[in-house]
Length: 626
Image 1 (tube, rainbow, N blue to C red):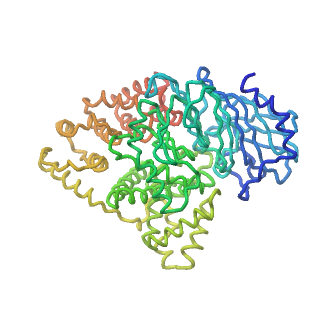
Image 2 (cartoon, rainbow, N blue to C red; image 1 turned 90 degrees about the vertical axis):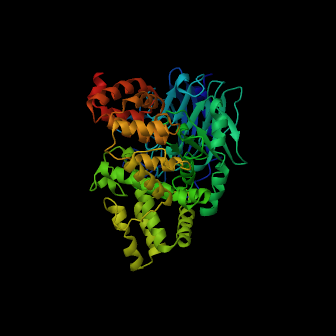
């Protein structure tokens, strides 16, 4: 019997249990609302538990099997609408064993297709037999040569913002939370992992079972399959990675357990039992993804000196801000990311000191300025609360949510004091744990718990300017980095004398080097570039942040000696943060745009769909004509 028929063979027994052994009700009162980025009728019906039974087929690049969706239907309506995207729906049955009528609606750009199922007023679950498309937007299928080990294929998901619907039918809104269980069959030489309770070693059957008892939104449901091994760090943290990089990764992230303890000390108990980290192949489109219990991370943060582990602190912080208290819609994305950047820097301050955290804050401010310049100072997309109607919700993923959100929260802290602000944030996490939060309700909480009619404080903070206004308000906190000031002194020395041997750089971290490279003058000559490269080896750096910043200069200055290394970087890295500015720079000049098209054609199979869409938009019709 094939796995995809497993659920159907068991249905009679499962459905018979419904009458005497219902699933426990959700612990939190369900929040009924409508999400502009979901077809689902979440204002009437809401799912609260999911059971997946899937087979991973690397040859066809599909997942096939079934999804059992449990839901609350207090209004006794006769229609359940779920989100899908290019799913082949083969059969739907109700919890009484009867076949259900269903239809798949018209496809809408960015959103996929609605799946409308006819239910009965007392229906509590539907079972859906389905198969994903080989082009499922959330899933990336890698050939062995695209992995670190070069021996086995690899699969991983990236469901944020609304891509979960491309690999399982669901109510794909961040405001809808559900627990889940899963049974996944993979080739017996591979290990399957999910954002759930995970195995720590392979078994001989290739069948793995998962349980996520806490309710999470669909975008945090994740899967990865590959030649993976586990290395513990302490009793509740550890690293999953391909065998060839496992030891290196474990050493780089050996402070993982310490980070969790620091985070708990600041904002309370870690609610997810384990915190493990999975190092993915380099095609992963982001630095990290905060999937509960199992952060997905790019190998580009393995620098050999722990200099880029603040990204791990960021994903860990999401265990509170985002995973525990979640933005209700993608218009409220800043509530996830602003709190998380603030928390990340507090963790790094405890771990490395205030000076270190201030370097991160100043780099973040530079990123914020760059994004505002690109978007336009008066763009509505520079507001914290966004309006993403009829737009791709992925448009929310800019430095506005991250860095403008951070500086707004830092402003509050600086005006009321850290102790009082920490008490406010702790209460926020505790009060709204496992719930969705929108901007309006956050403002109500802010006014009640902090402002309390204090007009002087309200005038100092001016939350309306930050949340609903464009650009950066003039009361933005000032960041001073003593370490960066010393970098600036060395940079001035070089600009004056054009000598590298006298510069005091021996103690610099990658952050100081990044600041140095970002502030190299536009007036540099090719001779200047060659001198700096010979002295400091930028083109052959092992640090991805340094490489990406340096290559931007190389493109603008036509420093062709770096082009082979640039091509190698673009061919081997799939992280959007790096690829987007590099392809953007190359598109500014006819000769480098041609090179960009040639490189993209060779590299695109290793890029995630989110990255391909962005780059193809930059390259335009040229890539289609190639």
